[in-house]
Image (cartoon, rainbow, N blue to C red):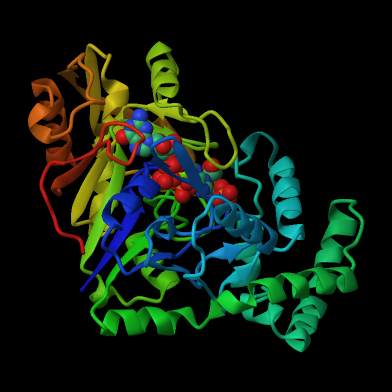
Length: 429
Ligand code: GDP
Ligand code: IMO
Ligand code: MG
């Protein structure tokens, strides 16, 4: 029996989908615990590319149960489309279950996201505009509509009657938008409920039964620790806790039930949207990383900002999340570089600081202190074992391991399923 959590250790898109796929071969269950369609997790098998937004990547493994947990915010139309598309590609989705406690993203949430971003002007967060922030604000404000409400007409009427008048007041007076029609929403969302009903269950009970039965469980976290609402670069963060602790909550798992926490890091860094980023490269090297890494958002297509590996942020997130193992992906993207830098310290106003700073503008003033390592200038994409790795690539990974502070066990050398090497073999099943 094992419960293995996978989280992003940077600002997202570290290849959590690929790592989930890699270790799910013998898993009994994969749970997506948090976030919404702001996430995009890619798995590439041969020429087939799957981009998951809500469905756990474990759906590609026959016999593996997949759960969308209570911590996820679901836009039902998008979920139905994602399921339909998977089915059209021959993927069996009959083992996909949805928590009856998951909150619903309503049509006004993306609209509100857009209007709020526009109002922030030059201080905009650069959200994915999927309604994530407004939906979680309504959840915390106890105004949310949940999956169970879609299956119970009187509950849905009650929830909409509670929420919509307040939304309409905001939309019409503050944003000069037309009001929403309760009866239209009722009809539309009851229909989504009917369609999804066979999958809607008390997911935490299924999860706890699986733990009790000694099953092998993976929690596929979305977003990343540096986007965490408490410990990330607030306010340039997502509206949830994509930490190991946060994903336990979203999945319905207690901290003492967790066996492993894998943090995924790219061999460099990227971030999408605004906010401080000490190791950002605004030069040709940054462009090269974007081009070679195909750094464009999986959900929104936006170009990702690129930079050197930030060892201070990585160590910070490793400690805060009780990380037990690290995976380093996209090493191949660095293959052509003559020199590679790692940020090993921060300097702020002439002093050394040990961690990301709470105030975004202050963190924005932090200067990265770098160590420079020689590149390997060899192709790693065809390496089939760690023994074949170029010497300088090993030196780089050894150094990252020392900086991160936990064993680096897996290495990504390309997007395909087989382009993953075990540096230290671990049985996560
Ligand atoms: P996630 O959100 O953490 O699951 O990551 P994304 O799927 O948004 O972004 C990772 C991108 O990098 C995807 O396009 C993957 O196909 C690709 N990818 C994953 N691992 C590797 C790797 O080791 N090398 C390269 N070059 N690409 C990779
Ligand atoms: P995965 O799971 C990268 C970022 C957005 C923005 C901030 C807030 O694929 O790694 P939101 O829409 O959540 O209110 O946006 O968070 N963001 C992500 N960046 N990968 C993600 O998910 C992200 N999910 C949110 O770009 O900066
Ligand atoms: Mg992604």
